[in-house]
Amino acid sequence: MLGFLALLLTGAAPPAARAAPTYDRPPISYADYPEDALRANRQGLVQVRLAIDAAGKVAGCTVVQSSGTPSLDAATCDILQSRAAFTPARDAAGRPVPDVYLQKIAWRIAGPVREPALDAAAQAWVNCLLTEAGSQARGHDPAESVADRAFAACTQGERGMLTAIAATVPKGATPVSEVPRELRQGIRETVLKRIAQLRAAEAGSSP
Image 1: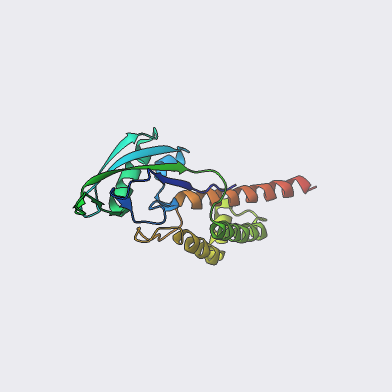
Image 2: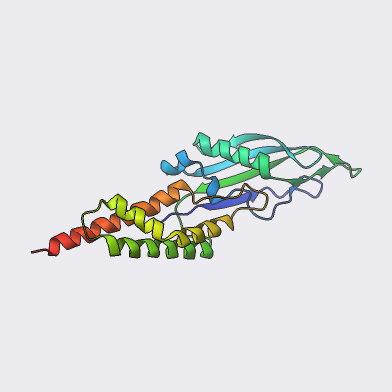
């Protein structure tokens, strides 16, 4: 079963005079998951203290609760510093002033799919790949070659998957230009497994 990223975004509710985030969607998406953490199946909660300047920009980020995985901690600060925006805090006279804001990000890999469109796109792509691989599994071609041909025949499904992923990226974030490598590799492994199963079944039924 394919795993998808579920991100939990929370923050302390500031008083009216405090700095407040202006984004209405999480500024971190599935495509941002650090590859080393994804490969190692590392997850965790990161809490950071953001220094907000008088213009509402993030001027600094300090990890106050580590996830236990350096790349997740670093990615949290890097992304929030480049993408997060705030309504500046104001003093008693109404003038904008610097402030701090506590932010929590929970990095999760496995779990229920939270985006129906993403789920549907993934299923459509996998169905196409398995159908193509199944139709070409007989014979003596290497399984990798069969998988390559299946992917070449299902480019429309891959484009649909990319479109669905891109739709989850917050406004202003770096556009997604390709399906994340780890996700694509996981799907490829599913295809190779199906080819092996079909060939084993065929070998078992041969006289």
